[in-house]
Length: 349
Ligand code: FCA
Image (tube, rainbow, N blue to C red):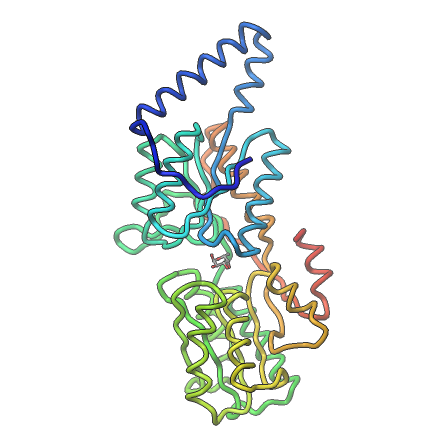
């Protein structure tokens, strides 16, 4: 198994290189059949399945877990998973070239920018590779989801509503007066799943009586902790009149950025209710701290299932020519300091 970034330094044109590799592979196959008979030949063919798993944030626990789960399935079923980073468009295209030169038949991808969908699908098609998306769905030139590329991701709006409901419940438990509470909404409106999630949380909060004028947007440039921290800091300093804050975003990494900014501003943990989404290492580390922080909880989704199922869908497509469902939506469970170990176990995380 390779764990690599990508390599664009071809000494041969890609088509020629692919032809050479295919020739070598078919020679090997002939040799295999000649030496071991038909049985050995067909098992070699099965072991020949190789897929890529390209992720936009290879250092984040969510994506590490997805890739681990795909690799584990590959070991179980006898196919190879090549783990690759695709942190920008150039890196993604190089990763696809790299996969093609290794003879991969397709790849799963969480793209760094959903608008790269047409370019990525096009490159895959040139090489005759199958592609499925996980987490972030490709957008076509018309800005609509590319329904022709099978997708597996969370039901963003519903999970967002779970976040909003859980925040409203905890506000009530703490006896907070709505007028005294502000919301830090760390937004990423370019990414549809992110907008669905924060819209869901906002709607649930408003339904529970949250004051809409007290919601402040902190647009982040990226889906990670440092960009959320940078977006959040000025919001606290500009709105010092609020005694209590709630924080939500598309994922827990971003909510953690908001919580760290609240601490830096001087808010105490009991003045803050931050609820994220994912349920990965970032949240486990926070729950493991001796003292509670403003990070109250997270809606956990099984990254293990996302990695495993998306890889399995692609594998079945390659080996049985069965196209996966156009869109598979997954659900979540609220995880807090009180139940996180149990939920972690239940979701196989
Ligand atoms: C997006 C987010 C990730 C994760 C995934 C399911 O890609 O950036 O943190 O929530 O959706």
